[in-house]
Image (cartoon, rainbow, N blue to C red; front, side, top):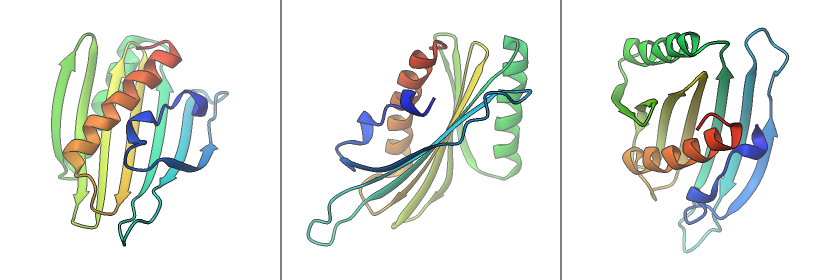
Amino acid sequence: MCDAVDTAPFEELTPEEETRNDSSEPDADLPLFACEIRMVSEEDAGNYTAISLNAKARIASTVSAAEDAYAGAVSYETEKGRDIAKDSEGGKRSTDVIMADSEQERHCRIHVQSSNAVLSLTLVVSGDTVDCKEANGLLHKVSNATLDAMGSG
């Protein structure tokens, strides 16, 4: 799955991909596909942006099981008191999450359920180039391309 994660939406912010680590467990009872990608910008007059993107996808045996997993992820975020926004479009359900949004570092996440797949993308941005609302918009572009590559888009 790591190869399926398209980081093109972040190229303007952080054109250099530093690392890409696949930590998938495809043989688990509930297969987990996981990838961590670190991207950095070139330092320019003191401006420096570092992005850490974690992608996790679970493929459930049924759509109903995926719906339950998605609901559990949203419930977890709600219980943590995080700022969330839900959306549903074209057979996909998604939730945007803002975990922390300070001037120097943002922690943003989206959960997307499409068919029997649940994809969670977590982004940590260091630097002042993008806020969580904009970052979550970029995460949706990544999620669409990733789910399409996985055959669940």
